[in-house]
Length: 222
Image (tube, rainbow, N blue to C red; front, side, top):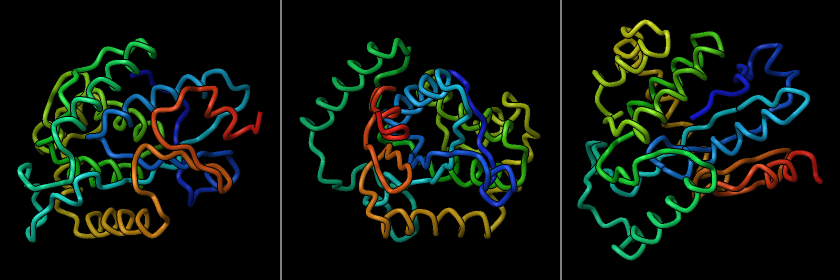
């Protein structure tokens, strides 16, 4: 997955002034991986930066038990035919975007630890380090087939992205980081986001791994 324009903290002066697109996504969603590749290509063709305002989304919410753990055998309303069609769509889009990725849909991977750490990094590290970590998480799962729900894997990914690997433990041991991500999950549902990736710009939205020209129309209106 190619790196692209860095994210700016929405609370910083740069974040307030920079043009940005809101992206709702979950690392375990293959279409989010492909959608970010499409966004990277659109960002690269622009004359001015377009920042990413990332909002985590819990794709596994319907499979979580009372303890918050994902039960891969829980009925999520999706049958074998759904997953086969999804796999075919992933393969088609991966070929269209010329991206190498595993076609295993990672149905047993829980991305919540990765989202908690990523959100923590986004709030505590420079924006370029968050982006490098964000890209590295996607790549670890969808190109290397690693379990991003494993803290040890996340520590390795953090080190590869230039972060202190102990950042992962600090994030996962921080109740405020968990609460903040849960609040974002709830906010996404309140805002009517039902699937990912969802790209939002000035009240208009595009859902799915849409091609760069669709993102251009969303942002530029042409």
